[in-house]
Image (cartoon, rainbow, N blue to C red; front, side, top):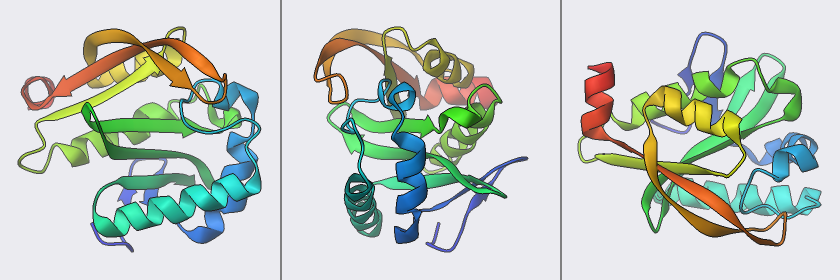
Length: 180
């Protein structure tokens, strides 16, 4: 996929990030109810954090080491989704602005990205996970076919401490069984 290409679903576009997304990212993610479910971002989340994140994400994208997309509607960016290399392997991560929760947007975006990921030979496993108690994230992963792969303690930067984290896994074999 080139920088000017997008993935489209029925209601959404997954498009490459742009530097001018910083203000919108900041406005959506600087919400305790969003950040409390994530591992990496600080709280409070300042505008410069969004700018630093975007600069790093665009560098990783150019190097081919990560693919992070803006989840967009006609009104603009509503969240982010991506696959990044981590120690457990390629890892699916995502978040939505709170105003967009409960409408099936993340299930739709995640399904599009996971199907895109498994189109390529050699992409044999995809990991993800969620902090204990985040049932909404588990439901998204479960619908896609991810299965429990273990539990561990993971540092949450917003909380400033280790929290129980559930690891999940989707293999190519399971994906092909579910989606042909």
